[in-house]
Image (cartoon, rainbow, N blue to C red):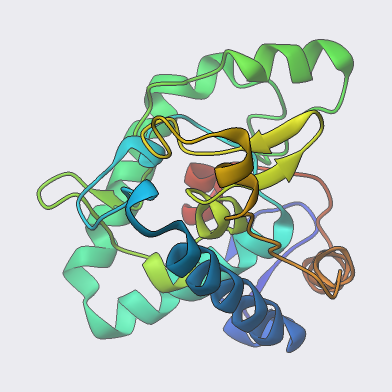
Length: 217
């Protein structure tokens, strides 16, 4: 039977049935929170189709994100095989550029969790385009299956010491105006539990990056 093994080696076809059932609920909650924050943000929020500012720079994703992306590429295999080939090709090309300096296991794609590796990741591949980004039209080929970081990017999200917002958005807004547009992405606090379900299903633990999630090893 095709599966994504505990070694993170690709064996056969992608298995979408491993995606936890509660992921659909999580996505519903986050997308609703985004819609609400977008409405409250009004003209402060400049995110539009074709804006790719947030599509450059490698970032860490969970095994739930990775599994969702693989489910998405499986769907793209069926709906638009040629486009799926291009996505995987971009992922391979990306890893050929950034693989040598990857602060983790280059075989499995799992990021190291040491203090030194985490510091190295802060400066790692900050200009690298996402493998899912179609450079011809500036659109995401796996938008419906995008990682959680992508789903919450743009509106103000509370972080330690304040709010994280897209650097292109909220220009001239006051602290109070930014706070009024806060996006609370996971009020039910279920993401960690769903990530755990994904790690159990895939037998893989730890964070990775989009390019590794999309290709075979």
